[in-house]
Image (cartoon, rainbow, N blue to C red; front, side):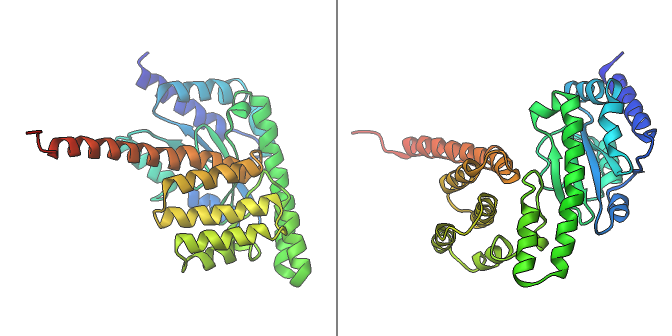
Length: 303
């Protein structure tokens, strides 16, 4: 059987198996999943490599064909969405992706496939199962996904209570919500100055001014490790938007990761180093080499 035929069979079997799960409701589009989740529930996105053989076939064999009961029983009544991810898609593949996701890219926080992402009704990725040590073992992946869904429910209760509270009690509830380090907290739910206030303040600052401001915040000793990472994430985003020095970005993400490599923000920083910083460093290195070569060509020959 040719690879394309095999992949077609894989895709058909995958959707048939997912569509037949008892107790779980499958959405056909991202917009439909958002509507079903509403304001206080989550849905699970299952993103898989749909047109590159090795990953797709391994994903099918590992997560669907052999272990679908173990992997998906944790969904229970949770809504879910299957998202095909293509590399260098042809026109048909582009239409298939757009049928599911519309004109959206994958939500921020999804670094690789296959990936299970817990997404809230506003489209924020709140947690993921995509670490290689989890994905290599379907039992671990199922346990990690189950924990994310349970933690999401508890965290969402805290955030809902925080919305109704004020003053010190509001901050206490938000801090408790942040204690779930395997989950992200959406920006609109964060208290100032952990991130929202920081982002707003940074918008009018130069990079040196912003650096001084951030260092003063971090030096006051009142932030928890997760809050320190959040503040650094806001600053790193500002540096990226302002096209600041790549060396500064590397230093920021490295420092942010090292505060707590196991937290959501620590994992995020590690991914940022690979996805954003390394390509920028390679580009800068390539430009330096080209500049040197051009200088040699332009230099007049010795008399």
